[in-house]
Length: 87
Image 1 (cartoon, rainbow, N blue to C red):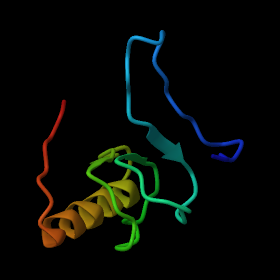
Image 2: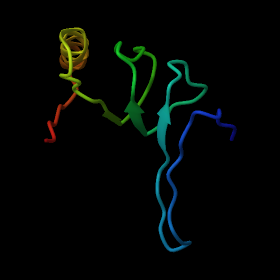
Image 3: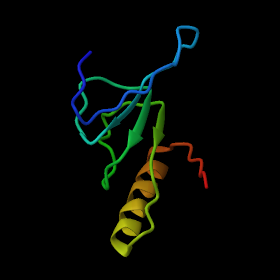
Image 4: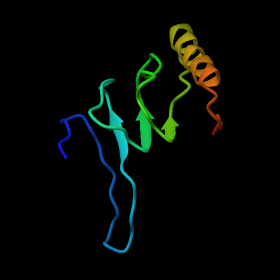
């Protein structure tokens, strides 16, 4: 599997643990689906991006970021995603 220089792939500390990869990338186009995606974009993810767990950030540092966070929230609600808020 090939990853770009800006991608990050967490891994287990030893051979006794099994983990699924978490994709952390600045790219919006992925070559394959990931079970876990950490979404870092100001716009909602493409609808063809398949995931089971998608992690997003609610950036409240400016009005523009707040509006983009709200847009993504409504996008996820329209898709019927289960939304959990962590604080």
